[in-house]
Structure formats: structure tokens, C-alpha cells
Image 1 (cartoon, rainbow, N blue to C red):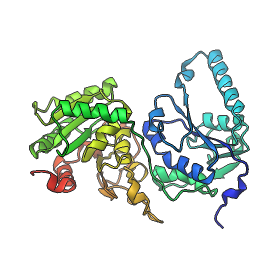
Image 2 (tube, one colour; image 1 turned 45 degrees about the vertical axis):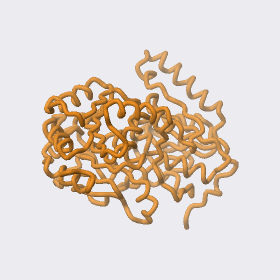
Image 3 (cartoon, rainbow, N blue to C red; image 1 turned 45 degrees about the horizontal axis):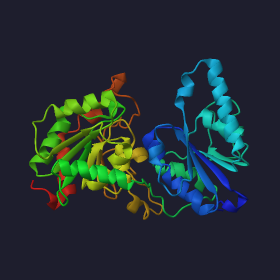
Image 4 (cartoon, rainbow, N blue to C red; image 1 turned 120 degrees about the vertical axis):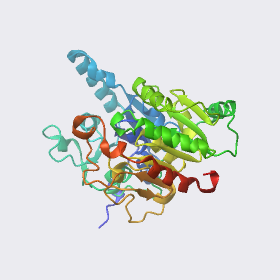
Length: 385
């Protein structure tokens, strides 16, 4: 018998916790929709790490965002304990009726218990974490393995009758961000109607990045094919260095605009929204581009595409009982998005490079010609090549 959400009564305040990275937070968006549709009168609050809030700001399904300061962890022991205790008291004072832990870490488990909420949902931790962790929750969802992260997040609430027919990953872009991006593109001579490819070649994890010369070869092909190419990166020094090393392989070109470290996350979304295609690696910007509806071609190495492949909101609405990216590896598509991964037996391994090298052979050995073939098909009649 299917679970029924009527088991939850008088739910007025809900806390959803995802204390992870930028992309992880974005992929929780359908859970907020499910909660709002099931409990339309409830106030839904998100607890996320400071610096990831932009993934949910402007989302009408999220009423409030509480940023958690990860700097607490670096404080001296007594100061740390005092700050943690004060935070737990604040959570309890808010009078949440329900908590939904999408993190599966020890801290959210303690926050769930300390909140005093009558209903505390999470994925069953099994034997992971501290002794007695399972007792922090009132409702434990079965852990489901070979599922996309969006569906894994939804599974935590769906197993208890909290559902949505629209599992879309929504990313809100304010008009000011669109205006600023429009100004940057106009200044670079990129006009409406021109074919634009947005490339974000970096990740905070360098073992997810492709070979510099290979990435440059693809950019060069796109430029020669007549597209306008916009390259972005985060302002983090190691990502800037990686992007600059790629661009060092290229000569100046009027169709190339570099915005390395110059956009906020909302502005990066506006760049992707303006583009006809996004090309990059497994990263938060890849998820943002997919969320705004831009076709994505992404390179994957040690990460599982079946967990982290670019989501397609339109295709998700037609999923039914199907599974996006059903194969373990290889080239796969979901809706308008395509993930390119080696079909090697060891992929995906989930490791930070081969034998701890921080270099993933399954990724760096992807041939540029293979990538160009996929890009050519995606761009179709929009290019000269």
C-alpha cells in the first residue's frame, strides 16, 4: 500500500537540511515543491551551508533560508561547543513541526533531534554515524542506490506520501543578473541571434577536469565553426589557474569572451540561459545550466552519471517509472542533455584520480574528436562546420 501523507497532522513549519556543496543544494529543489504541494499552508525553511544560498534564493517554494557557518568547526573547542549549543537552541526555538534531513551527516541528525519536531524524516543511516543515530528520527526512508540524486532526495519524502508530479530543478535568476550579463555580452559584440556556447571548464575538484590542450582544441573548433564562446570559472585561485592554462593554448579571437571569476552564481546562470549550449565538466555550473533549460554536454570521469548527470526538467515530467541515465557508464543522454564518459570497467570509481594522483585517466583520455562529434550534432544547423 502506498504511503499516505495524512499521517502528518498540523504541519505548519518545516525545516529542510542540506549541508553540502552548491550543486547538491540546487538538486534539492523538487523536495521543496513536494512539501509545498502536500502542505500548502506550511512555511518551509532551508538550512544550507553559507555560500550555497544562491541556489535557492528566489525559489517560491522556499520561504526562508538559514545559512550555516562552517567556520564554527575551526573554532577552539569551548568556543565551538558554545556556538553549536546556541545554534541548536535557536533551531528549537523556531518550533518546527517537521524536519527533513537530506544530508545524512551527524550534525543534521542532532539538529533534527534538538529541534523538537514531531516528525523527523531522513534516509536510514544504517550503521553509519554515531551510536543511536537512527533514534534521532521518527521516519526513516529506505536507502535506494542506483538513482539520480534528484530522485534520491525526493525518495526521502515520497516514501511517506509527500509527492510532486513536477520534479523540476528550479533556479531563479533576478532581472538585475540578466541585465548585467546582457551588458557584458553586448560590450563584447555578442548580439541577439548569434549562436553562443557557454563553457565552464573547471571544477572545485581538479580531478574532474579535462586535459587543458583537449579543452582548448574544442574551443578552437567552436570558434572556427562560427560560434561565440563565453568561458567562465569560479574566482577560486586554483580554478582560475586551470582556466587560464586552457586559454593559454588559444590565440585571441573576436568570438571568444572570457569572464573568469567575474560572475556571481546568479549571473553565471544568466550566461547559461543566454547560451544555445553549455559544455563543461561535472560541476555545479553544469547543474545550473541544465536547470535553466540550456542543452548540456558534460564530461564525466570518476563520478557516476546515474547519480550526477545533468537533469532535464522537461524530460523529468515524462519519466514515469523510467530511470534517467540507466547505464553504469559510456555516453548517455537524458532529454536534451548528454554526458560523455569512458565505458571502462573501473568507471565510475568515485576516487580523486587514479591511485590518488588527482588525475582521472578515464576523463583526460576522452578524445576531442569524440566530443566535437557530439557538439556538432547538438548545434546542428547553428554552425558552419
